[in-house]
Length: 99
Image 1: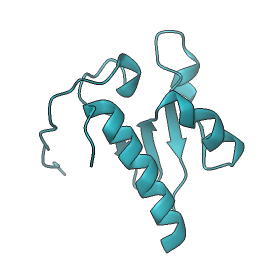
Image 2 (image 1 turned 90 degrees about the vertical axis):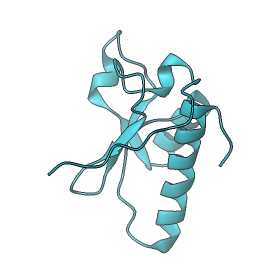
Image 3 (image 1 turned 30 degrees about the horizontal axis):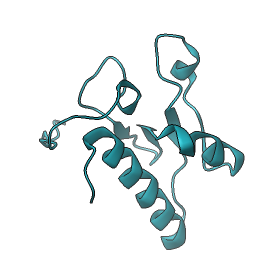
């Protein structure tokens, strides 16, 4: 299945805002519902400490940003709101735009 390409606004975010080596992908969703995405450095530790996310295994390699996480699937509306906020923060970092 092919998915539509969505043009983002100007990509002005830092290198760690993207799934290296990409310069335009900041995240994607897997069939099980988990999200692989980059998050601002300030969110990495809080997301890990609250079990919302875990480091993506690839982020342990020195050439990949440590800002790549696996965000767990939301199970209800409240968790969906949190996941949406994290996705919005990732998008803002990648585009340097406000939503």
